Length: 132
Image 1 (cartoon, rainbow, N blue to C red):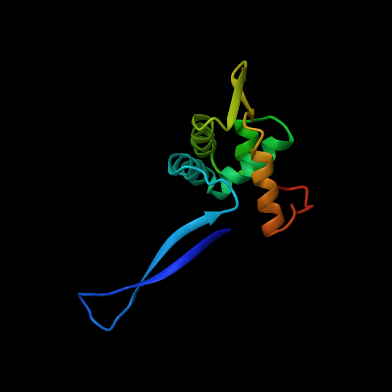
Image 2: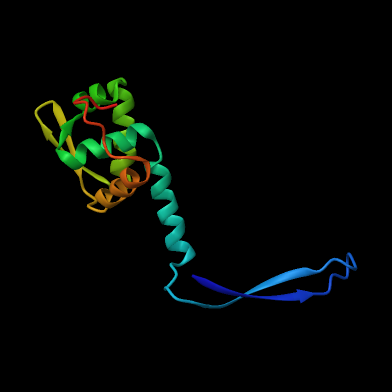
């Protein structure tokens, strides 16, 4: 938690209105650099789509083909392929080819922790047997 010290500054542009200056005094945890936080935000933006989250959830359980992921997401294969490309480009997924089929799996183990946070915040997976 950040400890903040507040001081009053004279407002020469608008007399009678005090401005507050916040000065960081100390913090109890090491803070990440803005460069790292920008990279993290970009990765989180990539994940921030319901179909991509569903894909990750499925792949955390087992590898799957594009066609099966499309059926689970109830969208056309070309749309799932685009989601998979984005996730793979970010380093979240691996792929392997078996004949004409391409199978995807999780490359980034930290995705399990992210999905756990989502489940903790928004509720556990539904036990319907069908991905929703």
